[in-house]
Length: 122
Image (cartoon, rainbow, N blue to C red; front, side):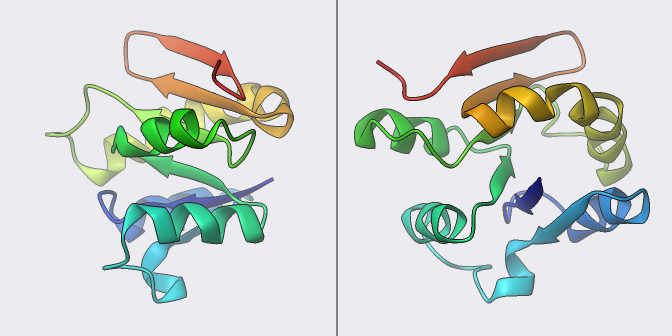
């Protein structure tokens, strides 16, 4: 599974994931740092990437398009946290979520809870 981190997350988070064996990159690595969400969404679909974001717009795009990909990990209740906190939250949970993400899902991940919704959203 390959991950694409959105611009609202630090590139340090992608580096932290990569250091422990996840295949992760940041939108800046693909010249998408200032790209609109729709373009990032389309890039993720074309390259079979799971998007990791703190932006609820990706969930809206999935719903509007009735799309079954890309899977999205939405970090919640962490906006004021440091990149190290984001990385730890992901590292503690991604391994157990890969099956649902491969099948197509939006995962809402916060320090308090995990919610999984299968794709497409109906």
